[in-house]
Amino acid sequence: MMRENIMQIDIITLFPEMFENFLKTSILKRAQDENKVKVRTVNLRDYSTDKHRSVDEPPYGGGGGMVIGPQPFFHAVDALKQDGSKVVLLSPQGRLFTQRVAEELAQMNHIILLCGHYEGIDERVRQNLANDDISIGDYVLTGGETAAMVVVDAVVRLIPGVLGNELSASEESFSMGLLEYPQYTRPREYSGLKVPEVLLSGNHEKIRRWRRKEALRRTLKLRADLFESFSFTEEDLALIREVVKEELESLKY
Ligand code: ADE
Image (cartoon, rainbow, N blue to C red; front, top):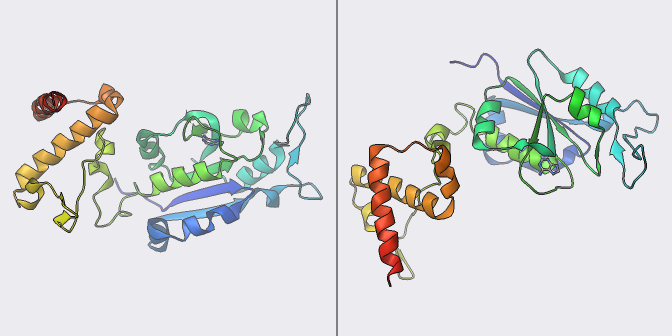
C-alpha cells in the first residue's frame, strides 16, 4: 500500500536543542532531505500562557521536585493535532518499546511525541491527552528526550525507501525475531584472526544457511526468550539440532 502523505513527527519538549545534531546526521538527515519524513521540534515553553513562560509547579500534596503542568501540553497538542494524529507520551510507566511497536508507529501519518523532564508531568496529560505511553526500558532517564530519539530512530528507518541500498528493514534478523548473524569484512585475516571460510566461498546457498544457523546460535545462547514468539521452519529445526550438538561438543573440552 502506498503512503498518501509524508509521515510527520512532532516532538514537544523543553529542550529542542537536544535534537539538533541527532536530526542533522546520517540516515535521519537523509530521510528528511528526501522527503520521506518531516520531523519538527516544538518548544513546550512557547505554549505556556504564564507571563514568565513558566511550565512547572510544585506538586499538590507536597513532596520535592517540580511537576510540569497540563496547560502547555494541552495547548501545544491542540495546535499540532490533525485527524488521526497519534499522541505518544514517553515515560517509564509506558508499554515497552520493541520492534513490533516501532512497526506499528511506522504506519502512522502523524505522531506527536510528548517529552517530560524533571520529576514528572501532571497525570492529566497521560490520562486525557496522550493516546499511547511508551517506555524504552526499565530505567529512569532525566527526561523523555533521549527516549524520543530512540523511538524516532527506530521508526524512521522502517519508512519505505529510507534504508535505500541497505538491507531492507523487514528482512533484518530482529524483524524476523532472531539476533543478527555475525558480519565480517576485509581483511581475510587480521592479526591471525580469520574470517569464516564459508563466507569466502562464493556459494550463496551455503552462506545463507550458515548465516541462518549463526543467527539461531546467537539467539539460543544470548536471548533464548526470543524463541517464545518465534515460528521455526523445518530448516531451522535441523540447524538448531546442529547448533545444540556443536555447543554440547564444545563443552566437553
Ligand atoms: N522518561 C524517563 N525515563 C524513561 C524511559 N525509560 N522511557 C521513556 N521515557 C522515559
